[in-house]
Image 1 (tube, rainbow, N blue to C red):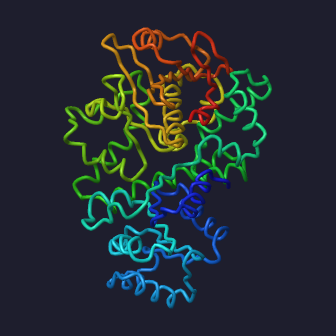
Image 2 (spheres, one colour; image 1 turned 120 degrees about the horizontal axis):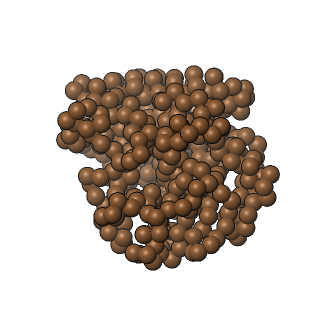
Image 3 (cartoon, rainbow, N blue to C red; image 1 turned 90 degrees about the vertical axis):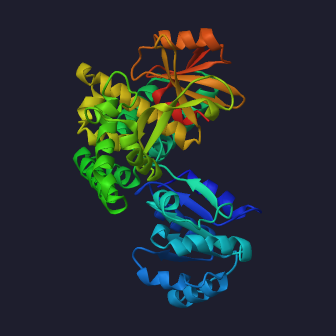
Length: 431
């Protein structure tokens, strides 16, 4: 399936300031697949090394001189390793800390060799166990589950993408048949999500029961990782927090509360668990911003945050949501549907490398997302249906007078009263 990150890999290959690349991302977002495809298409040959499957490879990194490593790898893999023309892939590199350290010497002494390192729990390993990490000697690239645009590509809706992008730029309404088709696909995406293996199964079978099985397999793999790559004392707390993310999204106030995990729960008790989930790439925090000033990061509150799962389909699966709950209007599902829509919008913004925050006034007015688009700080409000009335956004506009605002809902494109109307299916256009 087509992934937009491929273009970023090509830019890395052609960059004059290229360093060894570390591709980060949660388990099963498609890192190994896309890197091997990239190597096959863009290089004369590829040398693939998996440190979990091929444990003998670790012996080659006792001597960290690049030429020593390359000589041994070439002989072991029976492949010639050429500068510029060979892509070297270090998969599951967190299983060999010495290989991570070696990236420093490849950068300094053998940068003509192209290396991509990846691993599902690389973020955890790098931040919690490696003292000799090659700071400043590597580039980083984050990979996420398929966003809605990639989902449309996978479901053979390329024409629809073009129509959506054009209407986003011009604020002209999308033709009603296409608008309704796109909304239907958006609802399916809320259930299926963007994990490549799940999307592939959906495209092949259109069977939602098989989709649920695939999603549960991924969730179980995540829980297994929490046990294998975590401190013993942190395992139960990490699992408790992860299970609680989607549960709290079903509540009217989506701010994450430690007391909802267990009675008397405190932030200090669960700080390690939250850090692990974020480093593993399977969840992310959206912080409240205290002042609308640049740089936004400097004004975030470290105590107030919302918590979102890395994939909206896994979020649905974790609560055993049925496809009919999403496709058909069910008033008892509205609260969770609102949280699910927020999780979806957050993931789309994150995929577009947009840092975002949320804002709350003393009057408890709340705007779902605050982000920077170009020179402007832009408020983004999210509605899971076509009800676009909002006192909170109006209060924000009166207080801060933004260049314009964005309202995301099931309504068509438009621009009125300095508010840009963006349909739920078009969030991927916000860049």
